[in-house]
Image 1 (cartoon, rainbow, N blue to C red):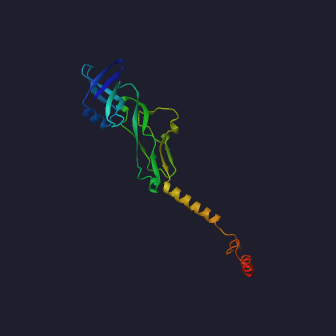
Image 2: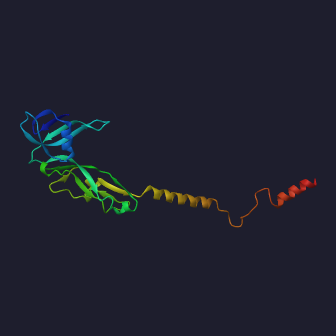
Image 3: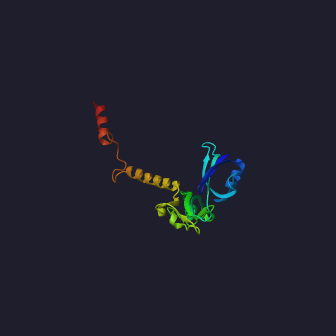
Length: 207
């Protein structure tokens, strides 16, 4: 699999590496790791800057690596995971929890970049929303972006079945109101029948 490593005012260096080795390293989930490219000055700390994948199969086709200095802060994207879904009161009551934001842009020293950030949603009830400001950033890490307090992490919505049942009950009440017979008119004969109808029918027989 082809790739390129660049950064720290050095030339970009293209490389090829066994795809299985790359998948194994990325599967470990480390944000920072060392890479050694033949003829590029030995082992160097890098982070994954970009991954190009096959649009159909999803397999990794190209890898961009960025050289970093361990004493300088950098920006990186890390996965945001949630835990405690099954314990959330809203989920126990039948609500549906939606994980909205799955990645966060952070700034930190390369050695302080976490493999992931975890949000605890075990206290969320129905119709509740968790925003980013409810999560404490790990030590040495700053969240990056505008209007961070408006970033939605997760929401819990009421189950659609409950909404449908309420709508059915409302429709049944409306139908019942429209089909009511006014008081004093129960059992009234249809138009054209009754005493007047009988007289007309009788008169026809006499003639």
